[in-house]
Structures are given as structure tokens and as C-alpha cells.
Length: 270
Picture 1 (cartoon, rainbow, N blue to C red):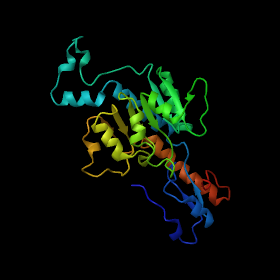
Picture 2: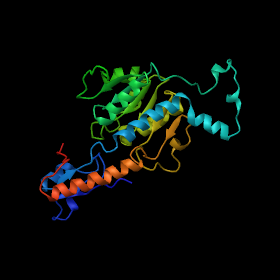
Picture 3: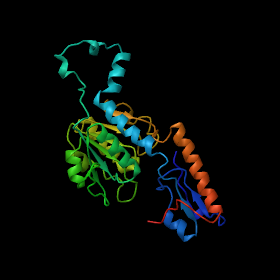
Picture 4: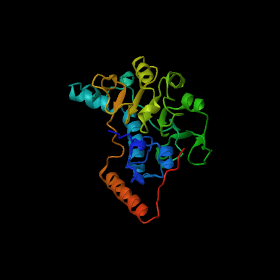
């Protein structure tokens, strides 16, 4: 569970807050700066792991992997039949080649890794953020509305700020194609979860793949656990063995550098 740092209540002796992760939305960096406290994070330690999870989500949905696994475990063997009339079998499988993935706030290392991997699979990538520009061989920079209306997969990669909180709401979801899927591996609160649940229940979009949620874990009665068009994972993008070791090493390096008087990976107040 994420720990919210109450900067104002920290002892006067505290001079460094070493975030064990990349996101620092749980720390008021402005308040820390006022008190002369440095804040550092661990950038890019989980790039490969999170990017691989995004691609895994897309790939799994393309063959309805979880649904078909569940069907087999439940005794349904119909998919073993070589019946070419079964093209209407639900859920439908499809190729990733030719599909579009839209990256919201994807100009960082994870978004770029996702774009490269998806393009290697024959997909098209678009990107929306303040700093996004067309990059040949990587993505096309587009408006948020264009991204939402044209993407087969909408993948969230922006940090959680007051500006991005709840930005994927009912209006944004209504712009998405009914065949599109939402992927969120960034921060749960970027998505208005209540609006998303309504859209999923009413099949306004094809599905959602969520490694992050507004509340982690979601309440026991959350519909996210039972909706058939949701792939839910418990914030695992960063949890690979190599990734966790890299995080520990980076946090230790941040502390050692600060003690030497040569701080690294320092976060500036917004």
C-alpha cells in the first residue's frame, strides 16, 4: 500500500526523502523544498517490466487468453473443434498487426518502450502529451480527442497530478471505439473508476486491463473483480525479480550520493 508522506510532521533532522519508486505523487515536493528537504526517486528502474506488461495485455486480449483458459478449466472444449464456421465465436480473436495503440503521456521511457515493441508487432503508435512531437519510426503526435477516437488500445502512462486526476472519465470513454480497450499501468486515479465500470457494464468499450486502481486493493465488492471484460492485476508491472533488485540498488545509490554531497535523481517542486 502506498505511503503518503506528511512532510510537515517530519522531524527537523530529515534532509532527504528517498522514494522507492518512480512516481512521487505521494510526496509534496513543494512543502519539502520549503523545509530544505530533498526528494529523489528511482527513474526508469521498471521500464522493461511495465512495457512488457502493456504488450502482454494487448496480446492476451487479442486471443482472449484469460477467457479461453477459464473456459477450458470450466469444461468447455468447443474451441478444439476445427470449425471454420465458428468465426462468430465469442470472444472474437484478432491480429495486432494494423491496430493502433494510443499512448497518453507516453513520452517517457516506458511509453517509448511500448511504442517500439508494438511497432515491432506491426502496430501503429500515436502519442498525446504536452511535449509529444511526431517521431518518425516511433509515433505520431495527436490531440487527446484524436487518440481516443482512433485507438484500438488506449494506454495510460502519465503521472498523477491535479490536472490528470480523473481525466479518463465518462466523456473520454465515450470517445473511444466500442471495440477499443483501455490499459492503465500508470496510476489508478488517472481513470475515473466509477465511469469506467459503467462503460464496461454497458459494453461501451470492449474492455479494460488494469494493473493499477484508485484504491489498492479495490474493495471486496468492487465490480472490477467480476466484470468479464476486465483483466485485473495487483500492481505487478514493477515486481519482477530483476526489477526489484534494480530498485533497491538505485535507492541505496541515491542515499549514498546524498550523503557524499552529490545528490542524484532529485525531483524539483512542481
